[in-house]
Image (cartoon, rainbow, N blue to C red; front, side):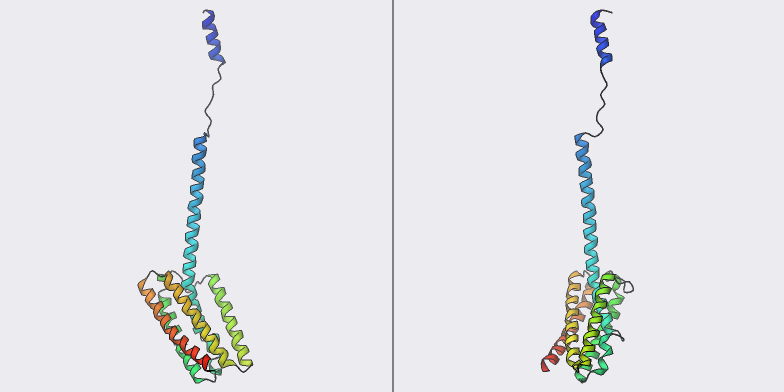
Length: 204
């Protein structure tokens, strides 16, 4: 073996085998893009679920408020017999029938609206409970102060107005024609009662 061949052999043995890095810049970029895409996916899913929950709560709130106001042991019914005005008692009777009929029909379509009447969300139930307590307190104060008729008319007018607003919100979220028809009819009936309560307030 001549000197050149010997030196070449030594040079080959002296070379260190270099391994390619596991994470090249391209792989790191691809990995980062994947993480970002996954995060965006979960964010979109979360937003869609949150939006769907808000829509469901609109349907729930309309049902729950109507059910509470038309309940036999609810505040409106509890003070009905204490009213002096026969007109107010008649308006209340009509309102109770209107709400009760709606609750029965609408409750039967709850699956279409995407909610369960027997399992109302805590948010809606809490807001409705607070509203019921406020009505009871207002009517009790009106009764004790000898102003029940005026307080009752004012309270009923306000509650009917809120129900009408709830109807409009539910209608804007409804994609079912039959469901929309039921809600729209309810809104129209409530609007007529709203006029009666307003006239009663203006006459006092």
